[in-house]
Length: 361
Image 1 (spheres, one colour):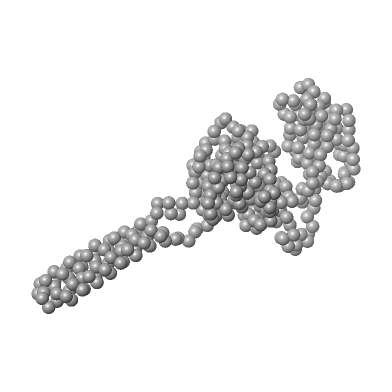
Image 2 (cartoon, rainbow, N blue to C red):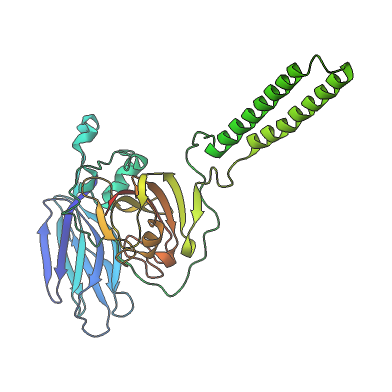
């Protein structure tokens, strides 16, 4: 089962709305209208096959909207009405059944951008798609960067309260092959050259004075040569053990408690404040639920550092270069704060974004 297409109905006081359901749909939310009359309660009533039920009750300035999960199937006789003085807006989605042959179809025939976050979550729960492959399967070339315009799917909502800093970071998902630092290679080569030069110089001096030196002098020179070699060996061993302090570091904590996990380095210069950047991303709650995504086709464009997105993005994307990938764990104070972004993002939510910088200019 998938949710496809928007469904909505405006209920006015004193009127009823009856129909025989010809296409199954789901009612997911009820909200008071923009014009409020009085402060008394307004109830939403549904009659299904001659049985009446109260879906919810809304009160101005207290409860002005309510999330629902009511599915009405094809062929049912349904009547909606309200009891009270205020207009109520019902919203939801039409329901489409997945065919049994859908598993035999090629993945290339499905455009994931055509689905809402709720549909994607349901497909993930049913094992139809792998969320970790959404970014890998994205196409970086199917867009026009000159014509692309930033949309407003991510908006900044300021919050006066600061959330606690995230102290624990996620370990790297994959181990990178260990690289030998350039500095270490240079030290090894220099030590080897010095050792060989010392040996060659000792041999040459020994040949030149061989006929003039006594056995005691030869013994003394051999001792000196051995001591010189011993002095070179600790230097060589020390150079082998020397490693950059930051080698293997893949996770860092930024301003405001934002945790950035470096999953892939890109190429070229890093994006600076004021640059116009194009992003692919998947937005999830800490429980893994996907609430927004853009992984294919036209990237999401915005002006970096201009306040067009949440603070966590302005800070977490700064310095990324083209093709770079990160996982940003953003506390509520750097995202949507104590109000959240209902119905998908609850209040005080920590958000997790898997992002890729497609291009910037």
